[in-house]
View 1 (cartoon, rainbow, N blue to C red):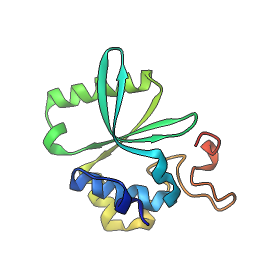
View 2 (tube, rainbow, N blue to C red):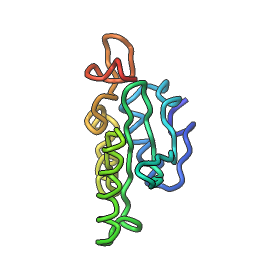
View 3 (tube, helix red, strand yellow):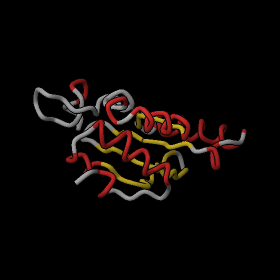
Length: 138
């Protein structure tokens, strides 16, 4: 079963990420490591990550930025403060923008494979769904 059939999406933007970025770049086994709407607390602030990909030694925060909630100057500033806190807490933050997901969708799944989520693309050699660079981390 595909990741977009198993994981929850609260918006079309989240569904688009699951369908056109995550699904082509990973194997279905990653589902157990992907946590939708994951809460992280750092320095007294609690942040909700759109999708957390949690490995043994690596934590990836996937942030999906649509124009509705991320288009103002104050939202832009808050997003950068939030991203800095997540980095300080040990998270690798990967951002996807609404307009970019539309571009990937038009190109088809082969245009997205492995380019947008470094370290999570499928490998042929060992069957591990994490990339060669980080295969021990997931």
